[in-house]
Image (cartoon, each protein chain N blue to C red):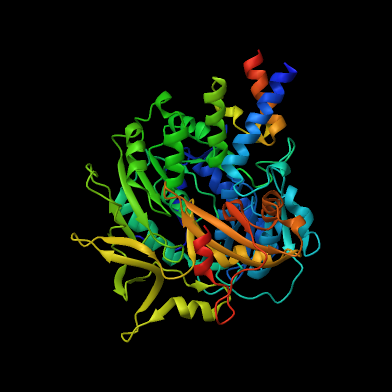
Length: 488
Length: 87
C-alpha cells in the first residue's frame, strides 16, 4: 500500500490529507502544508529551468528558516540531492565542501554571495534575500542513483567528508521512527539541530510524514538556554530531540522552574553520552516525559536505542541499548558493526574510504564498521566504551582531531602542532592544542583562538593552548602523543 | 561611578581570564578583545559568565539580554552591568 519512494512525497501526502494544517513555524511566521508544497513546486520549476536533475547536487547556504525547508523540498522534488551548508562555519571550510561536492547549483543567502561570485553565475533573486546560483564548472560528476542528501562530517585526513544518503535508506529510518515513537498530527516537533547535522533528518521528515507541526529554532536561540527554555514551553513542543549538552545547558542555566512543560511527551537525545547526574537534574523539570537514548553515527543514522526506565539510580552510564529493528548488528574485536538498508551509500567521491568503512562479509552482507567499541550488559544492551581512533565528540558534534591539527599547520607561524582530547570532571570534552611557533610573539592563546575561528567551526576550537619550543618525538620521529598527554 | 565601572571591568576580566583563558598571559586580554566572535567564549562559557555576574551583582538577565550585543567584550559587559546596577 505504501508506495512512496521519494522524500518529497511525504510532504505531498500530508498536504493532500490536511492542506491547512501548520507544517512549520519559525519566529513569528508559519506556513501550512499546502503552502509549503506550492512554494517548493515553484522553486522546483526554477531548478528545472537550469536543468537540475537526479544526477546533480544543489547546496543550500543559509541560516535556518522556512525558506531553507522550501529549498530542501524543491531540490528533492527535482530528484537531485541537497547539500546543507553550516552558514556559521568559516567560509573557507564551506568553500572546500561546495567545491568537493561539485554542486551544480546553490541557493544562498545574499550575505554569503560575494565569495562565490567567481565560480557561480547568478540566475535569479528568490524571496527573502536568497539567490539562485549556477556553477560555472562543466562536466560535473554524477550522483549515484536515488541520492537524497549529503551531510559533510569531520574527516581524519584533515578535510571534511561527505556522507551520501539515498531516499531508500532515509525511509528505512523514518519508518522505524513511526513505529517506535508513534507520532501523530497533534504532535509538535522541535527542530533544534542545524540542517547539516543528521539529527535534523528525524525532525524534518518524521514530522512532515505525520502531518505534525515543526518548530524551527534559529541558531542563536538554539544555543541560548534562557530563550530556549521559554520557547519549548510557549510553542508547546511535544517531541524534543537534541544532544545531551543542550539538555544539560537547559536544566543548569535555563531557569526552567519559570515555565510549564506539560505538553512535552517524548524526549530523544543522541550524539554523545548523557551523564546520569545531569539527566536527573533535567528530570526535575521534565518528570512525566518518556526518554530515549539514541545512538548512531551519521553513516547509519540511529542504529541502536534505549528507553530510559523510571528508576535510573543504579546506573553508572546509560546503555546505548539494542539494535534498531531495521538493522542487524555484530561485535567484532569489541567493535560494533551495523548492517541494513538504512546505512549510507558511501562517502562522496571516496571509493577507498567507503570500502574501508562498508565491508562485505563472506555471505556478501555489507557491514558498516562504526569505529565504536562496545560491550554487552547482562540485559544484552550495548554499552559504549570508546573509540578505536582519534575521533571525539563535543556537544554532539564529531571531530577528527587531525582536522584541527591541519588548520593549525595552515598558520604560517606554526611549526608543529598536536591536538589531544580529555574529559573534565563533568565529563565534557576538553580539547588541548600543543603548538610550537616560530616566534614567541605568536605564543598567545587569544591570537590562536582568533585564528582558529577563521578556519574551524566554533565547536572545533581548542579549549586550551600550550606553547612548546618543539613537540616531543618518539624514537621513530613521530609526535609523541603519550608524552603530551602527561602535560594536560 | 567611574571608579565603579573600572572595578566592574577588572572583576569581569579576572573571571574571564581565570575561567576561559588558562595558560594565557593576562596582559593580552584587553577591554575590547572580542570574546564571543573571537572564539574565547562559547555558549556554555557565556552562561557561566552570566551566572557569575548575576551572583556578584545581584540582578537577573532577561532572556533576550544574553546576546553578543551585551557580552562580546569586557567594555560591553561592564557597561551593561553598570546600567543594571546603577539605575
